[in-house]
Length: 256
Image (cartoon, rainbow, N blue to C red):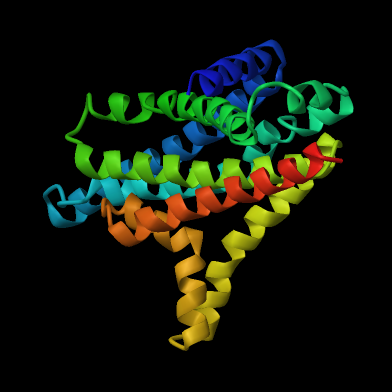
């Protein structure tokens, strides 16, 4: 565990030295804030219109009206920018010819993979923490249900774990960071589009299997405020699968 944390600390320092983390954070927060502002504007306009027509304030669910669409749209943004966080993790080591030093170090393959994963997962956690200003600002003017909000953030965090593990796998395949980002993006798009095919195949066995693999459906349950064992197992197992693939790729390259 000590070796994992040491390597994770080194990787985090590299993130803050380079502009990647700052650019990703700026874009993510700017777009997320705009989406949140748009949803608040829609909610305010709808509430005012309903009050004028009915004479009283309607009982609207602010989580479903504001936070649910905001978080679902944030997941799409993360789909686009997460490969930028993971593309350098192994590819940069190979291009800079420092991977040989890493592979011949006393660290095990598992420690190397987990160290890099913990570092980028911590960066992602900080990104989510920086979005807490949205519910905090809204809580000043209205009551907020914090339990479904916690479930939503948990769903985004677990989904990010899947994104990052698959991005780590893509980075281990090549020494070119751009190619790593493209491969990662392709994998994530594939997982995303499975949900579309699930709706098209109906209730057939293939459709049910595709529905289980649909990341969007599992995330939507969390965003609704539902924390289920089925959804937890999906995100955790997909993250472990991505890390397993990364481990196998790195292990095969260690003995070349």
